[in-house]
Length: 142
Ligand code: THU
Image (cartoon, rainbow, N blue to C red):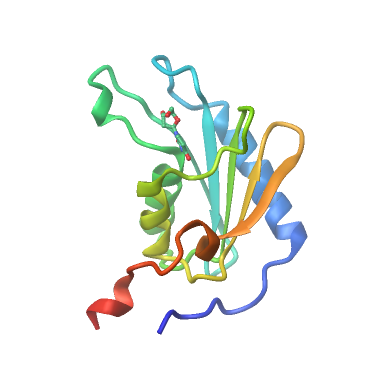
């Protein structure tokens, strides 16, 4: 069974995550795609962890903003993702790539809210379950 998140996350907390993702996006290293992305996750202690995309001249060695944010969460001792924000600028809302959806799934329950924003507005309010339905997760291995 998929674990449920401990408490609903408020819109104010999600907006703070969006702000953190916007701020960290400016530090992205994206000289090849010129496509900056920022992400932020809220942990079980109410802490926010933000990260940007980090590209590499050896293209496959780059990684996504969500991966950076998760690395910060785990490095700080966090083990749950209660909410996610992703910020990017494109015609369509910049949703997490497939690999990052699975990486987020490792730490997030299905009802985890995911807000997708650009520099000015929140473009999409969704959940991890909507982004990655019928997902495989740690519970399958226990
Ligand atoms: N990227 C992210 O950081 N997160 C996403 O959700 C989508 C894509 C990055 C990877 C790469 O550095 C750039 O955006 C273009 O794909």
